[in-house]
Length: 93
Image (cartoon, rainbow, N blue to C red; front, side, top):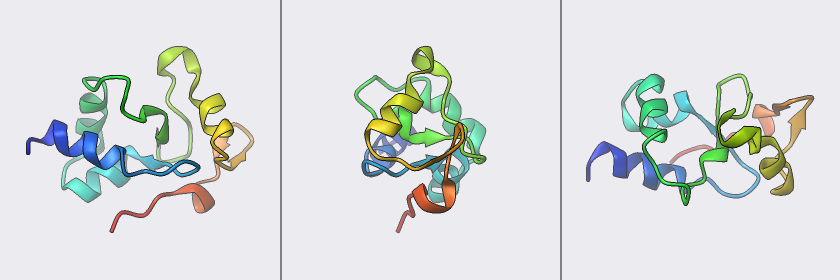
């Protein structure tokens, strides 16, 4: 499996109401967060892109800024405009 497929598979394990940062995914796969960001841009829209956030909890700004609304609809906890990472961070096994 190549890295693009690994990122796709990893993102698809994040359940509703949870998120992972680019750094979380990078640490899980053994690559840097910038590389994860570049790969995320290559993935199709059937990957749960809105569940991948910046390490400080800021949602992605792509797709016309719709990530916060999608995350809120899934029950993801927020503190202001940022995801409450202490409560919403998905832990990879």
